[in-house]
Image 1: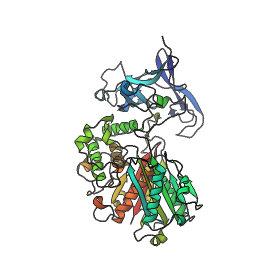
Image 2: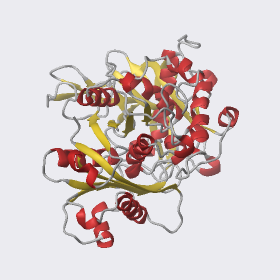
Image 3: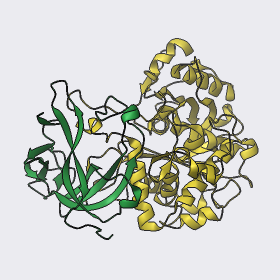
Image 4: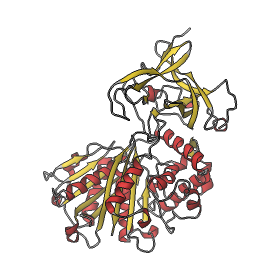
Length: 148
Length: 379
């Protein structure tokens, strides 16, 4: 049984096999940021607090990565093993729009406005045999066929 | 009244030139620009140059002449060339010099740009998100949803680019492609196919600028810079390579640079006779038409179907084939647009000459991480 490890520290946490995105919130204007950062681009205030971002939202826009990204930096399968994946921005209500891989890559099944939920996505096995994962959004299982 | 004139232009062919480095291509462009207005490197009082992958521009002095001139390197993403020109214009306008040269060149490896973060912390690239192509797919997907632009219109724009490129001896891709061929090519980042995208390439451009009141010493056909503006993104704009964006929206750096440039020039979009707009991919040209003030969002569908952006149309756009037909050597790309406009205003654009003697020409570059540069030229 391999250990699941995040692609990098400080981007998301893993609890019970589900990711949570680690964001910041400006203590002055309430603006949300991802990944965490100090310094608010909206009001220029320099005091931010750590927050966990929402794990569900709606698809704001999307595309499909149909060709293998250059590796490095890409850690997923390349060459003949490459599998196309969706990429989109998911709007987390009242927070921000976050860029993410999408587990769905069929253009016929991706619709702006559809409900999405945060999941882990395997990337590769590292040299220690750990399963390296990133975060992704999947169409919500609780609302199949959500309308736009 | 403009204080700055472009008096000499030089270009090294865009595309792929085996055995000629990016710097070499910059040097060739410099020599051609000097020859274009019959002047010498030793007459240049300053230089501003930029390249992303071609090496530090200022090192070219060991080839073109160790005259001791002040040479400033600029690196500003896709707006590198536009920024070099803007800096050159500012130098002349400030009175610090009478004549100088702006230079841009590059040579990139084939394929989409390889964008890497810090070692061991590159979660973004590692996760497969560090591709500029994805942004363009996502921006046009949202735009098509909001404003009813169709994929056929994307194909029309690409097909026009290759048709115009076929009339440009300096262009990389000179084979016309039908709309159907564009649509049928490999899907890269939905809804954008292979031929809807430009490719990183090679090339070099240089231009000699001087005080407007001394332009006639160099040429009898000067072109005057009415505006050169560069703007970066503001809070709420949707930009390339952004792990997150705010829900609040801003019109973006292109709208800001465009507005600033029109204010500087004291004219409006309706006064422009020919425009070169950043077309990293076909959708970008469409969106940038509205962002630069040439139409309302959504009007492009009909304008393009009616041929209004063709060389013979009401507002010819990307008459040299744009980035789609020329490729994108980052350092040179913005200056290529200005080069084309100088040719158009001189009446030297040959088979792709815009009819009726255009008087006002507009350029716009856009790139990571959310920067736009606009120039307005006149005869």
